[in-house]
Amino acid sequence: MISSELLQGYSKKSDRQLDLLKCPDCGSLHDEAKLSGSCYECDSHIAHKRYSTQATVDYAICSNCSSEVLYTRDNEIGERWEVPGYYCRNCTTILEVKSNGQFVQPEQFLNNSQGSGFEVQAVNSERTKTVAEMFSWSTKVEGVGFWSYQPDSHRVWLASLNNCYCGFVTLDDNDKLIQIWTDPGVRRQDVATMLLEYICETVLPADGELWMNKPTDQGKELFKSLIDSDDKIFGRKVEDKYVRKAIRL
Ligand SMILES: [Zn+2]
Ligand SMILES: [Zn+2]
Image (cartoon, rainbow, N blue to C red; front, side, top):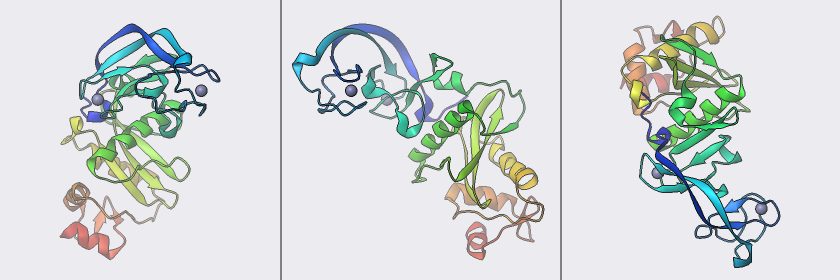
């Protein structure tokens, strides 16, 4: 169901014994060929043969670009994007995410028990926060040009359909709409519309207006289909005449 190219996981996984560099300071293993000199974990200088060691590591074939990805520190997603797992450095698809001590593929991680219909859930746990980071990551390739989710200043709600997270909406501290995104696999099922309806009816203050960023072309299409003759979307006046004009063009 999920079809974003950055959430495709792996097609095959196995293990292999090979020579790796072992950091003398933190013990993490690195792929010798790809290491540029410093340990990604602790910054120690380790590009030297005497740190070479034999180890058995998992590796997987990326479903999206068929690259071989070793499960070493080099291919961990890392703290920057707050997703515990491994990704393909070639195309950045996420191969696996760590969940309850086990690694699972993205689609499995996105499975939940929210029910078969459309459901909305606020990001309020480690798991939902990781989902928001994964989705925010996915919007990057679609030319949005920024990483939507900033945990310190944004609030995020996740859409769920058929027991699987499939989209999100982001508001900033001032209730301004920052982004709506849905996975291409669930497009044309009104997920974005229902997310927007949820925000307008449940989250915005009683007499609040709808403030939004400059919409993308896809956003314009969505808002144009929803705005009425009073410049309202789900009963909320679209503030900012430039945005209104952009929607109507
Ligand atoms: Zn280290
Ligand atoms: Zn890849």
